[in-house]
Amino acid sequence: MSSTPLALFVGLPNPVISDDEFALFRDTNPLGLFVGRRNQREPEQTRRLIDRFREAVGRDDAPVFTDQEGGRVQHLDAGPWPLFRSFGQFAELARRDFDLGKKALRLSSQAMGAMMTELGLSSGCSPVLDLVFETTSAVIGARSFGPDPDFIAALGREVVDGLLETGNMPVMKHIPGHGRATLDSHKERPVVDASRETLSATDFKPFVALKDTPWAMVAHVVYSAYDAELPASISPVMRDVIRKDMGYEGVLISDCIFMESLQGTLPERVRQVLDAGFDIALHSHGDVRESEAAAKAASPLTDAALKRIAAGKARLGNLKIDVRAAHRQVEAMFASALVS
Image (cartoon, rainbow, N blue to C red; front, top):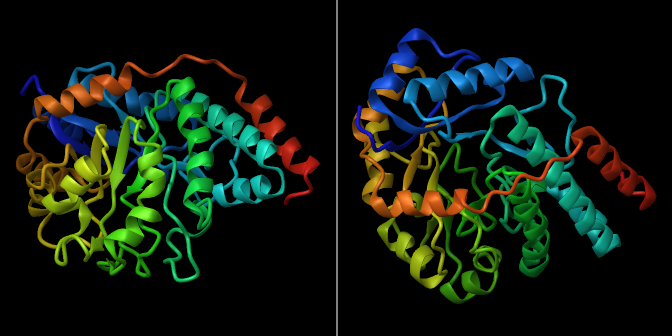
């Protein structure tokens, strides 16, 4: 096993790591693990799963990510965990009372971050900074704060800072913006034909405003004004747009490579992401054979990626809060503003 982790997150089909999976992770050393709803039944089981992955790769701080935004995208929803509101609901509250909306969102983000940190989860892959329009694919919907980039940036800041304070890594997505896509990139390859001027003034703007966020997830969306063929997640052109034009210096991880916006075999998709110059390929589910194929295609993290990862970790705080008490406070804020 290389001492430098592979530039790869792996996934699992079950709530336990099999002996074959343990041996594969031990021998290949992927950077991190992505766990979904199928993997998380209750707190102790989740902790055991995370500990076993970290034992396999021999790193106590190996990142373990999930999807935990709130609303319909929260993978901690089967056990005793509180259910969190969507960003769309917080946006509605903020439009009625901006300060109250920001306060509620910050507290909710702290509660969610503390809950994940207590479980050993490194990140919930949040916030979503995509704009939403009438034509936006339903895959975004209430996951977005709305159509106004400045409003999105202001609310997104509360999420980023609230998560960092509790030791949970924010990951802004889906850079450089999924909002103008009318197709679901899980199923098809969306093409956005907006001009460079329009994208810079709108979709890109929240990501630029929050470019100090340590991690960002790259969209599987084609932006034809820059690259007419390749989705951002596998486009060297879009890598340069994100790094140079948008000024983003943090860790760049692809959206899940199983999504059908990408083409080719699983190993080919891993190579497409890494050959385009992105830091990490996300393989968020699959069986042991698929994980082995992805691992064979992946290369070790670059020195630059290792430095970016270390810089992000250095910003994590250790704020401890009562998750359920904070959640009740947030619900009281919504009740006081009569927002359902």
